[in-house]
Image (cartoon, rainbow, N blue to C red; front, side, top):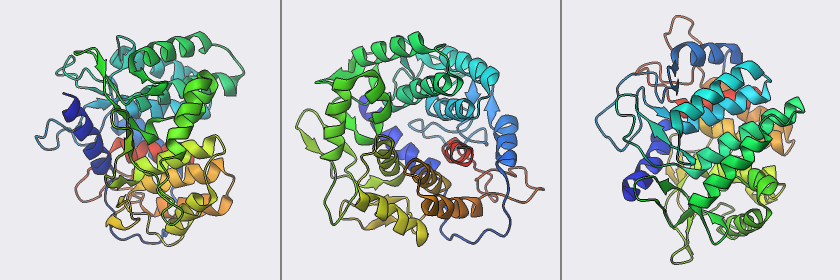
Length: 351
């Protein structure tokens, strides 16, 4: 079960990034209103945000596809609702999110309405993203509405996934155990800094020591608690950029790493995967890559990075009003529209 979970999460991140082999200049700029309309009317179902606009894609059960749901998507959508102060909608969507995904102290990473008890595993980064959205709601509204809820959610999560003061990747409700991996992008440093100082400092050290080198200012994918080593696996760019973003949010992103992102954005070569030597392993790209780059630019107050990434992102948006996926960042030909791209773009365009 744990091997299937890890494989599915890594493959999922790769597949959710719809490929755009050749970036073109945007002739027009479509506001986020079209994206919001698409998500609310064509990507939202009874239990949350669909993984894909198309109802069924393939037969590989290790991948969440079609009209299944991910707590990842709910976390991003809650982040958007909190930051835009849509308070009533936030409260209702959080209640739905908890009802759909929350089991035994964690948010399940995946939910299938046809098989509601099938996926009994969480992904710690998704729990932390949801918790972060609750923190943001109280911050922007100057309230304490979710203060006790945040403490309770984090306490129950940490009991299940923490080892040696580090939050591991997942907890299985079936086996009542967590795994031995600490994926670097799962360490939401700003949340840990607010809620758990000891784990924050431990996580920060593991992330910072995961920097590959001065020549290659990127970060290894994960750290294994069992053998105390970093994985030398291919670097999946959305995960890499989320690690950058988490470091930036606590003012710890190195200048050379930031410059790497800026150079890739400026040359429109922010590809989907790299080797640990910094070589591009997959020269397709995705809307999510540039959306996360926008978020990094926003956090570090780099207008040049933000604007450059936004320009590329908007060039990927479907601007044909006759298209059934108008406003999305999907593939006009296949009609595949993945929530990971849409929701990262939604957050980035509304910060």
